[in-house]
Image: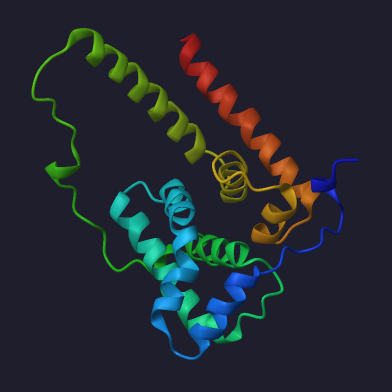
Length: 196
């Protein structure tokens, strides 16, 4: 039987180095907080981008996640991995954007990709890649929050089902089912656009 599908997975724990940094954070060492979170920032931002169409909102979501983590650090009991705890905070905030979003950002031309010359072959390849990315993003948007999160954590972050179950507060089997259903829906949606 696949260990990642264990019905009652053992929670991952905080590493020895993280325990040292946690102790230093609790003593007021802000550089320890930065060292503690630095390895997780890329993954947090990547997941935040799945929830927020605007990159500025994604950065705001991560920032709010870090603020909540900093405030909650004294109460963090290290019963799960720090990574799982951080992702859990981000997912909870993403479900309730009104709790952390201040006002809608305005669209700017700075976000547009305007080429300075035309290279026909390269431009065509980029257009195809952009179209595929748009279709994937659209398919991901149609998923439920749980499916989108589970698929991202599995495919992008490489988390096992036990860890995903810790983030989503469900069994490892349920986490696996969320991933499988999300993959099925994304593939069907992308195939629909390719075939048309």
